[in-house]
Image 1: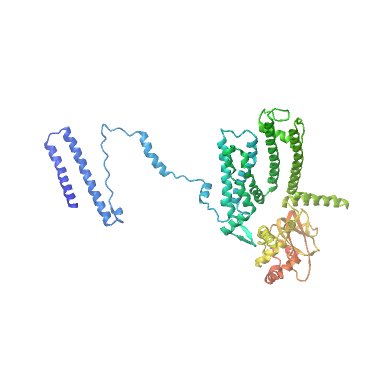
Image 2: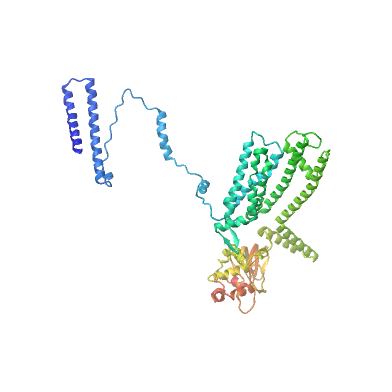
Length: 576
């Protein structure tokens, strides 16, 4: 086949070469010129086919190196434009460029969409710490509130009409789907504690959920009473079992309050919502009674003017809060309904006021305790006729301590926690400061952890004496925030050195073996200073369990005062 194709190509070449000589002998004409152009074009095509055949042979022999060694084909000369050819339209050029633009542009989805696509549903869910579960409880609570608020309203008011019935039903069945997903997907995956162990097994979690009272309530809430629609018509009251999923609402409240920093704000909003819902139900009942007796049939019922829900809600507010100014009921049914309204209103409103008082009281309990302590202290100082200067300093200490810490005593707040939890909190809050103290470099890490639990935080006012010259030193000080000054000299006001955050003083008295060591200088707070205090008794109880750290602290390099250059006075550590 190759030889036959080569013979054909040679014959074609000889035929092509014969054309120019023949054209010279013949007279020139338009037909001969056209055939000459066609002949040249055929010759070029034959050359291209030959080169293409050679490249194909090379690829079959060596497919790896053929791409590098293959010569580039010569550029094809542009064709002569024909007179009848029409220029390409700009619309066609745009259509040809659009696919290339689509291939070049890469659409990047937002981050939340990518996170949602990569999210994998967990096999087990921790109901106390999983924020996704809290978000799901919020969705379930929205579905439950849809049924709680709109079932009585659709039953009483004429808002459900044949023109919008499909929208109501669509939302109803969407809420039912959320209920089903909660029962089938989320609740059977909740972890639980059995004998002190957290259970992760799928079968055990599913069995535990099916044994609970909540599972029974969830199943009853999905009883399909809507089948009676075919007989009674679409009556919203047949969806009343959906309200039994109230346990999800209470669980959502507990989980949300656990993660909020100011949970009392949500408690106030929730208590207000309870009151609004009572008024909502009363407004629905009032409109139903008015429609039962006939709109505008008496002076007491709703007359059918204006917005029906707003007018009936206004009546409910005046009734339950017992404002007065309502028309007198005329029939026996109206009188009984109004009496029940008054009794329920007084009872419900008193409960709401009491609950609101408890919520606000719990939110401000810390500030109330601070005010009580301050008032009792001021009363005590006034009864013993303490000088006004001292009273003002005491009041300043109370105000600054409350504003800076939000409490008067940190230890009192943590006293109810287990020892391990108090250690974790102390490490997170104070370890960065204590670990930088050069005195404790090289000591056992666990010894430092035990020491953190014994530290007391004390606030000193500007000018307060932290320790005075001549007194027996029984504690060591670590500056948490602020500055202190070591003063002395003949007048007692010469500033020897200023100590800043992270500095330690008083360690000589704390580590003295032969008993208490008297202070040799005064240390005064320069501005507001927050200090950690470590008692000698607490330190000795800790060092009993860490003898190596005790030897390190009592060694001469640890207790010798540092030598400060060009200072003719005793260093600050020996003062205290």
